[in-house]
Structures are given as C-alpha cells and as structure tokens.
Length: 259
Length: 208
Image (cartoon, helix red, strand yellow):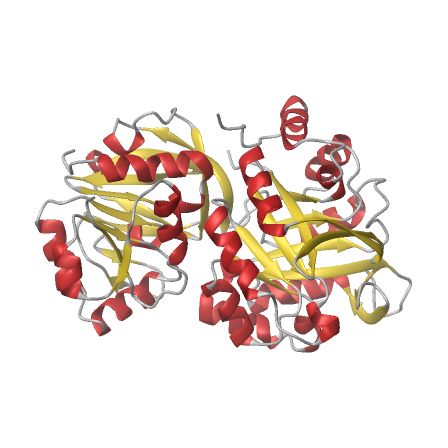
C-alpha cells in the first residue's frame, strides 16, 4: 500500500535554513545541505527546499546548493522559490532536483505549468499554493489564492485554481494554509480535504504542524497524500522516528525506518 | 574497478544515478558514445519522462543497436523507471510506441479513482515473486520510491521478480530476464535500500 509521506521543508535564505512565523522574524538554523542529509538519514520521505528570498530579490534560485544537495541526498527532493521561466525550471531539474515548484509564477502565467509538464513530464511540476480563508464573492469554496507570502490576495478561488492547474499538467499540489502557517496548532483540515478530494493528483498539506496528532488528522480526515513539516523537526522537539512511529501507531501506512 | 556506463539519451537529470553510485564508492560515466557503451562492464538505462520520447531520442542518437548489442553480450544491464518500460515490446504512452523488445510485454495505465491519485507517487512496498541477486539483503516488502502513470505488463510471469499494489492494481514492479534487470521505482532515490540494490547490481555477474 502506498505510504503517506512525511516531507521536511527547508526554507533557505543566503544558503542558510531559516524559519519564520508567518514569514516574519526569521532565524537561521543551519546549512541546507547538511540538514538535508541529516533528515534523509533520519528517515524523511522527501525534502523540499524553498529559496525564500530569490523571488523578492528578483534573482534565480541558488543552483549550486541544488547540485550539492543532489550529491548528498538519496531520496526525492523538490525546489521552489524564484522560478521565473522554463529555463529556470530546466536548470533546477538538471542540477538534480526531482521536482520543481511554481507558485506566484503560475498565478501570473498559468501556461508555465503546461510548458513544464510538456518539457519535463508532469511528475516534475509541483504547484505551490498559498491559500487563506476568504469571503470574496469570486471564491465560492471559501478559500482564496494569495501570493507574496500571504500579503496579496488574488481574488481566485483556491479549489478552482487547483483543478485548473491539474488540467494544465501539474503533477502534485503543495497546499499551504496561510492562516495555519507558523501557528503549530494544526493543519487546515477542511481546506486540505476540499482540495485533495477535488483533484486527482497528490496533495501535500502544509502549514500548522506542531505535533504528531496534527499529521494523523490531516492524513486521515484531511485526506492528504503527504504532510509537510518544518519547525517540528528543525527545533528538535520531535524526531522523524517519533513522527513515523506515531503515524504507524495510528494505523496510517508509512515507510518504516531503515536500519 | 569495473566500469559502469549510464546511458545519456537527453532525458534530463541523469546525475542522480551517478551520485548514488559515487555514494557507494563506484565511479560511473554518463555517455551516449556507442564505443563507451560497448566497452562498459555494466550498463544503466535510467528513466525520465515518457517512453515515446525516450525511444525517439535513442533512435536519434543511434543508440538502439548499441543497447541491443550490449544486452546480447550478457553483461549486467539495469533499467530504471522508463528504462524498465522501454525494455518491453511496446508502450501505450503516447499512442503505441515500439520499444526494445528485450522482455515480451507492454504497459498499462493506472485508472484514477477515489483514493487512487495518478501519477502513482511515493514509497510503496515491493513484494518478491522470486529471488534475484540484486535484492540480496533487502527484506521482502521493502518500500521504494515510485513516480509513474504507466506500469509494465510483461507477457510472462517468469520475467516478474517483484510486484507492487497500487489501488486495485497489482503490477510487476521489477522485471528480469537473463542479464537484464529492471525496476519501475527509482533505486537512486530510494534511500538506503535503493543504494543497497545498486551495490548488489555492481557485484552481480549478470547470471540470473
């Protein structure tokens, strides 16, 4: 049976892993390559690296870092942040990432999803979505797509956008709740279920994980295919082994730890 | 040390396989040079993208005969993902694409349904149908990393080494015939068990 994935997210700024609450007040935590290697050895199912400043600084992603990660990590990883066009996507994939994540670029230019899927295969293209609860009249699902770390609402319905991206060729959706992000009070279960059941491609739940029970809820009630975590493991409050055994104890199919 | 060649057919990222061999202490070369392929002790055909595009690239690069010759020579050959599918007679991806015909069979496509997302993406157990040298020391039911929408449909049960269940579909996830072994999952991205498989491949003499 296909395992539910536990994916560790590393936000990177100036080649340091960083963690902020609601995109503010970031602190540096360590070297992304070393941390990625450590999480791989500890049993992470997959890693995600976001260059969180590339977009704001209008530069391309740190390709040297992607190459270094590819030499040290023997599980899949995806890379996002600051992807500007198809040639940026190609560079990231050639540097060794399995997948490339597009977020605000896809909102601006949805066709980039179709272009990426055609050029590299849909399994390489992840749609990153930042979403928050909304009463906007054009958002009947009650959730709206936002960009710029949640600061700019787009008036786009989140479920519509997810379905459209699937049709365009996205192979996976990483669904981040801006309301829950950084709170450590749990994922937005309603949002996750809405999108995960509304599309036929895998959905990664993101934002709000603080304890193992939150992962259990989002993988079961939220119907997510994978759960993204960051601060739970970055701050050493939890280990991947504890998280995996907690999920297994709750009856969820997980990839057992290797010896 | 024995030489390992990784077939470069313009499919994008092939360095992951090279890095994985480096991690376990084996040099390898990424090549599209038929003479390097002919002279290699072991050949790896990694998979990225679609079967049709892969076959077209192989034709373009005049690599189909060198691959067939290598297989006929009896030295160990490893196919990964699409590199597994193109060993079959044909693939249904992009219509009906004639493939290498090293192992009789075709491919199927997962049907999406409730709880079954396509592509099949993630870690899924691999259950043995029989033993094979490349799985030495790897427990039955170990999970490996898959990313694919099409899966191998070999004509003969005898060519099936292991199977994997996804939704209602039990598919052949590892095929082998003679000196050829092929896995639908990405061994190079399957953690320590994947590296173990690659290590076993490096030690395999190509005999079933």
